[in-house]
Length: 139
Image (cartoon, rainbow, N blue to C red; front, side, top):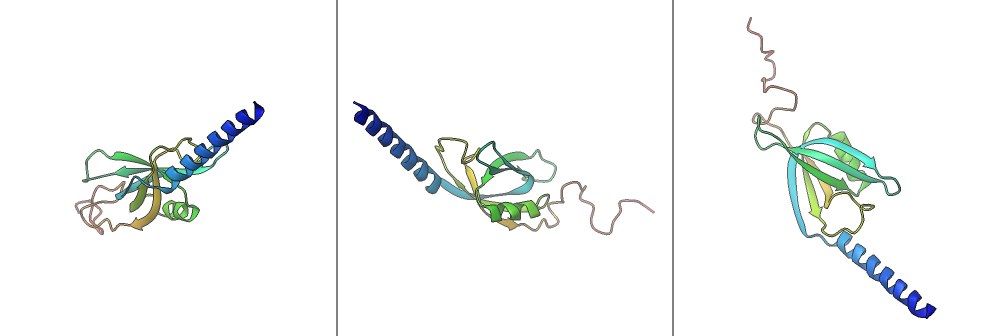
């Protein structure tokens, strides 16, 4: 009887490990989102993961939508940390069905960061769209 219980427990553990490996290595979708990274922090009691939040701004003056993401790669996390407050494009893979939050708090895993030129149509956060060299005062 003990052999059966041990065998069932071993099979259940192997199925759980196989399922976890599959959902972490197979992506449901891939894409890119552009905006301003507002927050990136390493958190967790036992399993430390990089979790972040990006404000997606479609047009200046509109309400920003928030995009929560996970960064599994330390080098990519450092790139994002260096670009905080700047407009970036984040490439991501979406992993559905992650069984526990020890691996990630979100289903969006960032794989690459690309700086985006803000250009004249997208003022930097905290500015009012005042052109360079113009202080806004009328002398």
